[in-house]
Length: 178
Image (cartoon, rainbow, N blue to C red; front, side, top):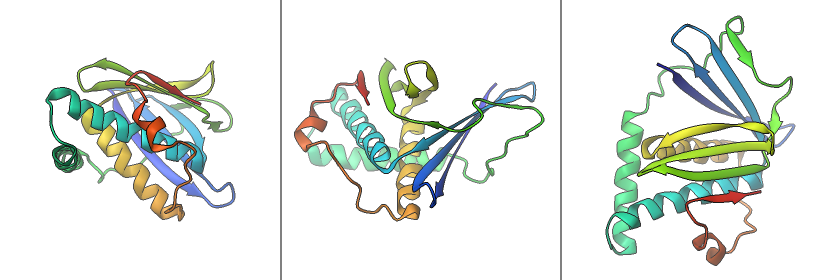
């Protein structure tokens, strides 16, 4: 059984978030990926996650936008209750393989629907370097919350946005943002 650990840390010198993702395997080894996330790219990830959550709720039944917001909040609370934030992010440097000498600069986000309420997030520095995370709706809500807390801690309370609301509404479940 693999355990996934995720950590966001703000670097004030770079004015970026440093994302650490560690996949711990049952035999004791692990693989760590590190990505720099710019403020703009972080905003795009949050918007993509919000759109994905809303689309997954709206596809279940025909409900009003107000009901979607209530269901979204309920899902988020349930997901955060299941998440274990008590375990500190810990990479055993002797047993862990770190991918890349330096963190990659994330520039491409691909989101694909794998099955009902399961998605694959591809975070890429270019077409050949990156990682995939398979996420259920609980992990998606948890990632969203972690990103929002990290944005707040970074002082990025007023996120930049180059996407209009209409452009966000037209994003499909299988999308590529770069």
